[in-house]
Image 1: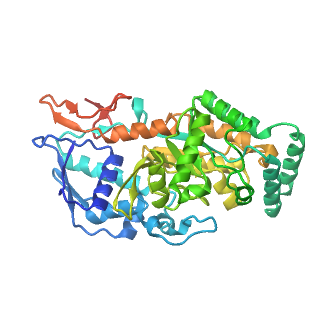
Image 2: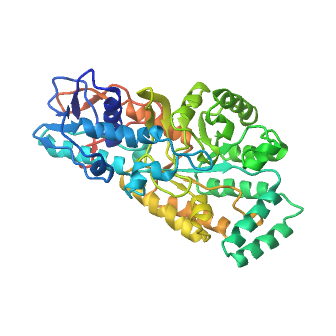
Image 3: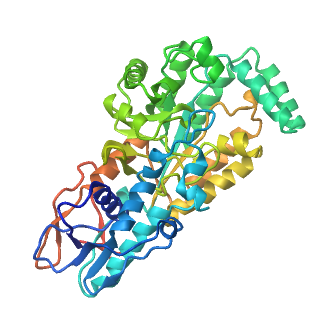
Length: 473
């Protein structure tokens, strides 16, 4: 266990950084002031931002004490809280903060969960400082699982699929993929009298179900217009028969239905609320999670609209043009509002991997390579006992331009779910677990060394372990 020796007037950004590091470290905080445990204090030790971002930080420790620098805590707020991105003014052609405004991208470490590794360094320092004192950690995931994974799907296409096929064929021809374009054309002609989008979506849902993986589907609920079609925004009505069939099939397999926020919601909280209400009429209840279409958001501002509309988590923070760790974490973290200098009230679930980051932006057309990239990042998440969140678009089917994608998705699901088996659940359940785990504290330590917990999560049995990872009481 640890005790916090922290000033009550710690600045908000530093308090946020400390809370995130402790949460990711899994260190159990004890409220018993008389317990002989390791003290964690906040110190004025200088920590260079570039070195911290690059992963070079080790908190100093002595017998029974670990010091955490104020500088380090502010750096956590800038990385995991997206503080630096919230201050950025640059935008790409879709109104997004470009990747090179991200400090991890600039440092060349965007494929490393830097902040999660720093939390591991804090845990290691506490173990080293403990000596004969007891150390207790909360197990990372339910049922003793050592890491977690989430499969997500953005339902971008339902109606007008030949338009998307034509655009995709043009994309392939511009990339010199003549053979692949010909295969797509043949598949599209063969599917002309069918519903290839619905069939593909139901196939993806069935693959998830067969693997025992309940996914999260992000569904558009805005109103399609000629203007939204031209922008590549809303292209179907969520209450249409075709969309309802897809949503119903996913929900029947235990999937969560969440909102895919349209472009208009980026700065308009009222639109968020109306789209949430519209999706509720199809999904059977209001969604608790949201991910922005095209990953298009104004960091900080858009999240305020999400909170005002009643969402509890946001799954937008991922790169559109590459895969990796936009917030430097492989986990769920509380959101941070840099302008208002306070937690946003929203949980952030970073998107780690997306299929189209490779095919659309990197020009990688081989789905086998996509899967290889996904599994490499999943291994990074497993190393820090964190959460991998992947996005597979259900419209990746031969008739819409992706002849080799369905088989690759089968491989991806099989490989992600194999041993060491992660805990796989819809994002709403994962977020609920992490919020509950974050609240666990030790009220006191009994004379026989047993720990009395102050706030065990109700839905899952809390497991504790010692500093070596062995089960402990």
